[in-house]
Image (tube, rainbow, N blue to C red; front, side):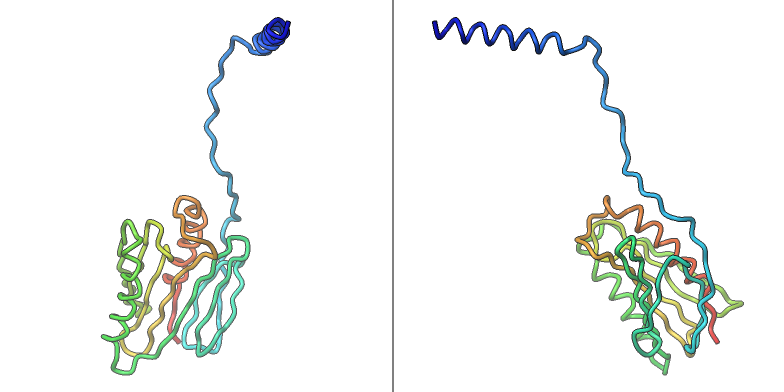
Length: 187
């Protein structure tokens, strides 16, 4: 009797399963994570420090100390750290320190792309670093006039680095950093 009940239950359940399935098999549609960031609008940032630049109007800027600033992107949970140092015959040391900071990420980075920046009209010379992979920072740069001013910048996200996940936000902020560097003017 127990086998008959089990067989009947299996037959009924199998029949319902067969009836509920359609003969039409559809592949899973491709999907993408949808992240909509606003089109960047840049405003000039002028201050008491010996430089000015343009920055994204969506970002929040705060002075930390001695012309060092943090530019925060609350929606993306990221911050750009700007550090200013005057050049006092120590340009070689400042350049070494900036390059060392970038190449400390080589352990986790898949690649570090260097993009030189030269603007003789504004006397701004520097290097922009695009770091790919699971490094702590994805973009950094330094800019100088080689005589008086030296500025470094790097972006950090408030999360464990996972390049695939933060790539859209990292690309957005990288564009902002390049705009900042290219709009930099010394006073």
